[in-house]
Length: 353
Image (cartoon, rainbow, N blue to C red; front, top):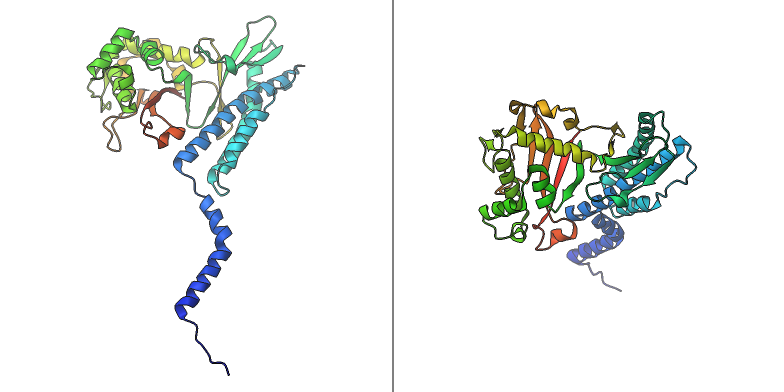
């Protein structure tokens, strides 16, 4: 006769737990895969929006071809579509940005249809004979992504921008070349003056300056204060800054208008990737720069946050509305996990719309 041997309660609990873990292993694995770091997401988002930008250009070109009844073959959007799909596939299945990205694609499809109609109406009675995709020619501050060719009138370069936060970058607006493509272009800072400014800030070279993005932020604040002759402000607080060199400010604003359309005088069309709305102008386009008075000009406070010694974004307001901002950025993407993550990457000049 066999004897009853009670099972140890602790052992029974462990055995039950192991069974449950084995059963839930696939689910737990899937749950683990739902996590994505901010760095990973930033990379994915960058890839997606790069593809979306090209998709907007190609889609607008194809809508123009179709509506104008041109015989030329449409452009192939497959590479940009594949890029967007690859980015979306990198996100976990439950990630909310999957749905957001899909809506942005739909918004661009709507916007390019409406934009093509508006663009063709703006050139009547002329009709394009050919549409070129000229994005590879984007250099030397040319803004055009497309070029419409006509008989009887000059070609029309078109700059295609996608907007989400009511900001659009000017031509060459995102650049590591802070010397010639920012300080010199907008503030007439000559090379020798630029070097003197670096020295005044305590840096021996441009390379040393760019070793940390906040060093460049110090330079940006220095240039704004010096070249616009600002009073009532410090590099760490522009909330009460006032312009005393109105001529320098007008020069800056005129330059921004020029570089919005680029050296090729492109027609700028802006697609809101959230709503699908088509826009044509920035707030600065509505300002009579030549008759602007100093009293109407103010600045973003640009106070440091998060314990930083200086802010990384500066901006100019007219009648209380920000019209342009300058943002200083550090290395992103894969570099964010390295010792070089705080090196200067670029300064981005954006107009508000």
